[in-house]
Amino acid sequence: MRKLHLLLAVALISSTAALSQEVEKTSKEGKKEKKDWSKVKLGDRANDHFMIQVGTETMIGLPDTVETKGIGRHLNIYVMLDKPFKTDPRFSVGFGVGIGSSNIYYNNTEVDLKGAVDRTRATLIDVEGKERFKKYKMATVWAEAPIELRYVANPLNSDKSFKVALGVKIGTMVSGYTKGKDLLSAAGQSIYGNKFIEKEKDRKFLNTTRLAGTLRFGKGNFTIYSAFQITNLYKDGQGPDSRPLSLGICLSGL
Image (cartoon, rainbow, N blue to C red; front, side):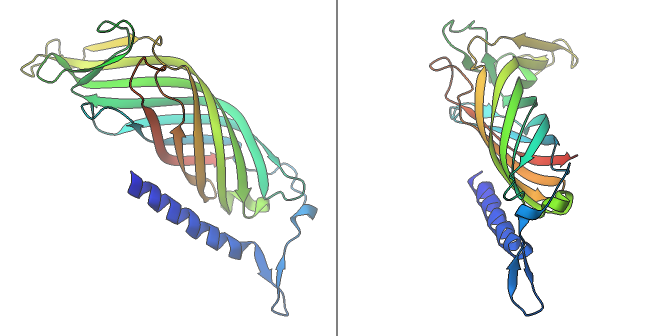
């Protein structure tokens, strides 16, 4: 994961270098001139008023004894307002509302959200060699309000221009639950068939407010983004100190 973030940083630096060439033009005399963006009138420009984000999800801080399985994933959908700076419309503030989701898949681990093992906290249970589900995940759904400080190289044509956005999002949990599919015996045999599903829903140990930092950069309607949850997934002392880390692609427009 550190290598992946290093690659993202290199890509961001390279894109910023290319940006410096985009925002300058050469006059007939060979001198470089900077455009006076304060005189540019944008009207109702298109600049990421609608965003769909899909990608991978991993959990940072889980105990070494806990195994995740496969690739966690998420889907976020936001409707945004975009307010450009009057002095330089390349910069703007974007803010809006939307819905976000997170799915983390576990291997030989189950999450006790109801307090059956310990009524004071959520417990991650090792079920290797015991009755267990073939597929098991923990999911959360959030109502969110993202805020971004945005930069676009050419605000007159943002759908084809380099852009970068740094921001935060605050959310409140709508739902938190675990879902197991196809219960297996200790010997690994299906007990009720592969259509059997057990879902447990409880939020009493979960931190129902989250704050996350976000970074997004790319060109036109497609950007790469990353988000790191600053707040713990669980309430203090009522679960492991773990935070989701997201990486994905954002499709934006309007």
